[in-house]
Amino acid sequence: MADLLTLAVDCGGSGIKANVLDDAGTAHADPVRVPTPYPLPPERLVETVADIAARLPDAGRLTLGMPGMIRHGVVVHTPHYVTRAGPRTRVETDLVDRWRSFDVRAALRARLGIPALVLNDAEVHGAGVVASSGVELVLTLGTGLGSALFDGGRLAPHLEWSRAPVRRSTTYDAYIGEPERRRLGDALWSRRVVTMVDGLRAVFWWDRLYLGGGNSRRLTPTALDRLGDDVVVVPNSAALTGGVRAWDLLTG
Image (tube, rainbow, N blue to C red; front, top):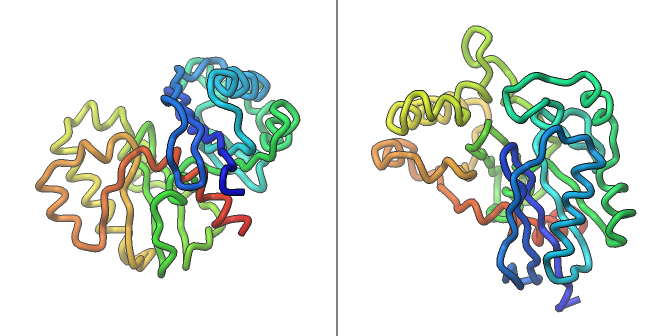
């Protein structure tokens, strides 16, 4: 199994990126990135992944991370792909119905003919960075806020707590997401991240918190100093390298 290659696909609100990696996490091609197409019914996502796979070396298995509540490869809820034109645009009832209970894992396995693992995107990101020691929380800062919790390397059931209100009717997702970063600027937005982290410490009592996602690199040096030694900023590349390690953490 030393030469088993994994097609890792990271599906975001604005882009879908993928690459093929070996067991050591070494890429075997240049990564492929395409804009997330909208509207995006489940079948179109499957075909988009198939098109990307055709542009990369053949792989023996697939890991896909996507936003929302995913249980055993089946969609319970996804926030962006039910909209007309992307995050924070009009929700289409037809897309909500088509995504609900859609078995993404089975559809990808049938389309590509290889074993597939489908998780929340933050869970895949976390698989690429956790030390598998103690309680480790992973937060991804991007279009919205993603999260994954690990205990001794074991993935806990996913919670969409980013949709919980942080003040009045504002959710964590909206409070810390990309639109607010653009509105506030990096300095004020970074202060919000610090406030969020300080508030969550008493909830999770983590041994280590990892901050990832595309916007983690926008945290200011002042904010990084205030976050503490138990907080580590990790590269966004973990969204793909985690696609390899996820198989060991979840099926090993």
